[in-house]
Image 1 (cartoon, rainbow, N blue to C red):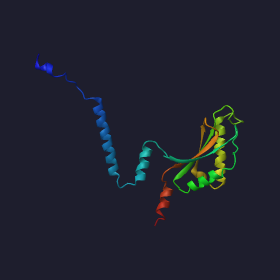
Image 2 (cartoon, rainbow, N blue to C red):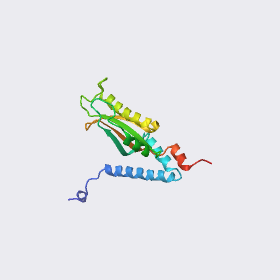
Image 3 (cartoon, rainbow, N blue to C red):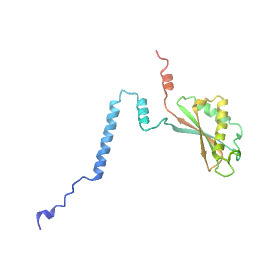
Image 4 (spheres, rainbow, N blue to C red):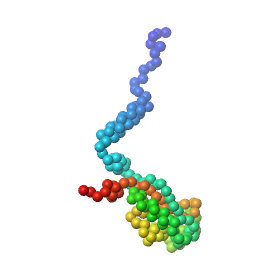
Length: 180
């Protein structure tokens, strides 16, 4: 037996996990360097820049919801008065940083479709439109509402979701007061 038999055969490269770990570490260091170089920058501007870099137009975080249930099959007629929803929407929209998304839904059955077109999506949109009309005619600003549709399996309803949409130039200006 020779001394050469005591040592394992030598390999030419490093393990892949080591390279991946080094890449990840360098990316993390680079991110912290970016944060430190931007310390005089407004954090909202930095967050908007990062969101734009990843293709995110308007990040929103859903925080609350209110619903209207009890729609008849194949009907978009409001099932009663939406006064509690209107009061909730007005109270929540006092904060200029939030938006409401009104999502109409069908129950997914073959009978719950728009009678004229046979479309479940059209019926869901009509249900959401009826809620939007009730909100806007009662003083809820139209420019703070978004409309969506969904096909649900749990019933015929409209869900109004409150989302934090972030600071805008208008809300920042209001918070800072009149310019001098």
